[in-house]
Image 1 (cartoon, rainbow, N blue to C red):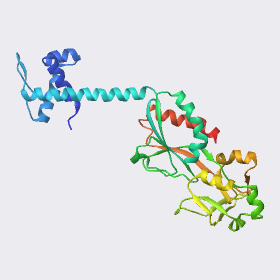
Image 2 (cartoon, rainbow, N blue to C red):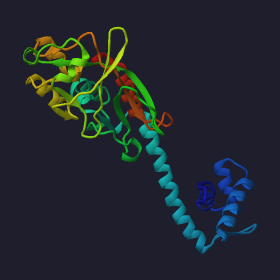
Image 3 (cartoon, one colour):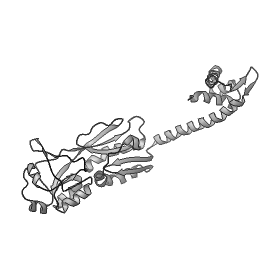
Image 4 (tube, one colour):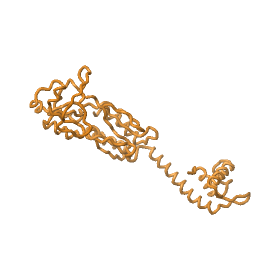
Amino acid sequence: MQPLEGFYYFTQVVDHGGFARAARVLGIPRSRVSRHVVALEADLNVRLVNRSTRRFVVTDVGHEVYRHATAMLAEADAALEAVEFARAAPRGTLRVSCPVALAQTPLASLLPDFLETFPAVRLQLHVSNRRVDVLSEGFDVALRVRSHPTGEDGLVMRSFGEFAEVLVASPAYLARAGELTQPMQLARHETLDYAGEFDRRPWELVGPAGEVLQVETKPRISCHDFVVLRAAVLAGLGLARLPETVVREDLERGTLVRALPAWSSPQGVLHVVFPSRRGLLPAVRAFIDFLAQRLPGAM
């Protein structure tokens, strides 16, 4: 692919009717203009202009190259203008992926403020517990909650803090199911697990002295939806580990209570991943900075 520079100088020569006039308009030496056009002719292996001390004539192929080069340069200018326009202020469409619970609880209350602050930004929010491929699926930002976040190839990660998870049950279930004072007693209880068919793992609990226990459970329900699990635990079907944001009001009202309050689940790290810090569009940067400022206080 030929560099645009040679085509630019060639179109300037044609537009101004010669090398000397083009050089005067551009404010550069005539030899520089001539050198670029000669190099372009050599690269293309054609004669674009016939020139002498008194005559300047564009060849037939030169006219054809001029027509295409003019259109190409106009498109290049339009591309640069589009980039400059996009970088001037946060604007354009922002594609974001977010887990269901995070979207329904803290994010839903924050998005109106973000969109009001940046009225030129349009948001496409993909709400799913599926781990999307940011690069191949064309997302600008993906929010994640992981106990042990790891780097992802080609992506930048920014952490916002920890996402608390609590073990809860309904008072009616605990009254019916009997004593629960030690983690190992969970094996005798009905459990509700946030997991799919093939990724269920033992429950990991951290004790008051920092000791870690892994407890095997046989969940009555396993699914990737906190709304379903919350409804099931409220109905008295068993115990579940749920984000504190999902059950905060239930705990305040007493419709759910914490089980094994001296024990906790490992905290999930709330973070975002995005393709690159370099060339980050203003809308993407504004969204990430907004989340960093507002999201930790909403959890």
